[in-house]
Image (cartoon, rainbow over all chains, first blue to last red):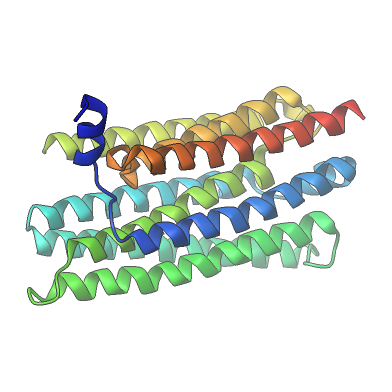
Length: 191
Length: 94
């Protein structure tokens, strides 16, 4: 066996393979949204730039940092579970969920502020994309709560604990994080 | 704090740092902040790509996954970023 083959044999897929297929499909679906957004952005550049003025860069950056910290917390939770520190792992997953709640509250606050200023889904194409992309992302945060709930359920009882399932829940949450990273760049910051 | 915990904390710090850099780029041009700017767009999209790569490699632990999975992930990310930048620059050239 060559060194390369031996090295590859020592590698393993984190979590269940099914979650990776799911992440792959989600990445392809979101990529198609991002490409469509970029096409319209190119076609209607002045409208998109004028509309972007009304988004809060600070909110976008704050949302990103909240999700990055939540990803860090859930990565630590997986590590704690591997080290058999199940109480610590549970606390870390709950803190991750708290970050998720904070993210959703800040999004609701941001949406209501935009609607109050008169910028709704039907205002123009930029705001249609803004509500669609942020809305579908929040839906994924909510689905992430189900995954994290399963992780907590697994951590609570010695009979149920499966590191693979715990890793899978964390992988879904990280996906929610990296999707937001691209949404932040495209909606809030690019010019 | 274990070596892995330290590494995860460093990764989180790096990601937060580049997020603040993106935020600063978006706010750094005063009254011209919302004019077409290829430099900002290119930097911001490349920073986002770096962040996604780091999240997938370090937090999702693809750095320990089989090489085939790593190559698929890199190819997907590189294709998306290349397509987004090509569309942006083709629009500017038109």
